[in-house]
Amino acid sequence: MTKTLLPARLPLPADHTEPVLDVVVPVFNEETDLEPSVRRLHAHLRATFPYPFRITVADNASTDATPRIAARLAADLPEATWIRLDEKGRGRALRTAWSGSNAPVLAYLDVDLSTELNALLPLVAPLISGHSDIAIGTRLARGSRVTRGPRREIISRCYNVLLRSALAVGFSDAQCGFKAIRREVAEQLLPLVEDSGWFFDTELLVIAERAGLRIHEVPVDWVDDPDSRVDLVSTAVADLRGIARIGRALARGTLPTARLGRSCENAPPVSLTAQLLRFGAVGALSTIAYVLLYAALRPVTGPQAANLWALSLCAVANTAANRRLTFGLRGRGDALRHQAKGLAVFGLGLALTSGALAVLHHGTRAPGRPTEITVLVVANLTATVLRFLLLRRWVFTPATARCDDTDGGAR
Image (cartoon, rainbow, N blue to C red):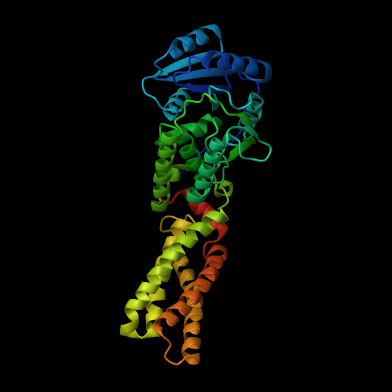
């Protein structure tokens, strides 16, 4: 598949007459907060933002007075407009508003204005200058000041730890309602994002990061809204389903990042923690398969031959699994070379386990089957540590992993 490279990042000209920034405020039944929040945002932008701007209220199927208030704001404020959707969903509202905007920088923030507005200019400045493709506010970075209850704090941190371990992401806060994106980037990303609800942000960021796009993070001051209408349970369930869906796409090599991206040099570094977790999972399954194969072959072939066959079969499967799951490589490119190097690493493992087996039989006459298997498992685990180091530093080099991972697989 031919990749669509995004246009080069260039600074925006200073003489814009049309809005440079379009700030979308997605709302559902926000008749209380909508007007004071939009007027406060409008006053802040007029006082601090040096370019023309627009505020777009995206009403997604409100059933209270929200539509009337949004229409009144659009009539009163020359920089404000509003759109009405017939279906709920924050992701749906953002997709619709961003897709219909002609501003070169698109942003959104939550209507409760939990994030301090002084962070808005630092958020969009890297996009205006051409430094970055996406910018996000983060409540979890050093320099952030967050006021919220322990329940939301624990949920937020657990969610982002889950993202880092399951999807190997590099960004720190997926769900802060304070983000911005270059329009040409949004035009490429939005058709690839499936979710239309709260997981929209996370999916957008995962696809962007896997495509090698530059994500700028801004520490923010954030105060929790005690009247938030977000249903934490249903949102958490939807997010877990979204993570599982993206995880399956990554495992199968079907995440649609092959369609766009920047050069490989901009791809995010591979997370060592995520690699260790995935390598450990693959290794545990390989060890179980090895033990079962050895136990099945031992009565037929003898100990050395059983060890050779079990280790050989598991080595090929282990290299293929680590190539895809641990190091993010997809497609057929360099697969044979990787397997050849993997077999060389297998040779070291074979020498280690066979040597341990030989030492056992030399020092102990007729060792019992449990003792034999225990020695082999210990030797195999030792070989696994060596295998990880060689896979990371020799078989799948960091540069190759990043470039192939950015390609997303299909070639």
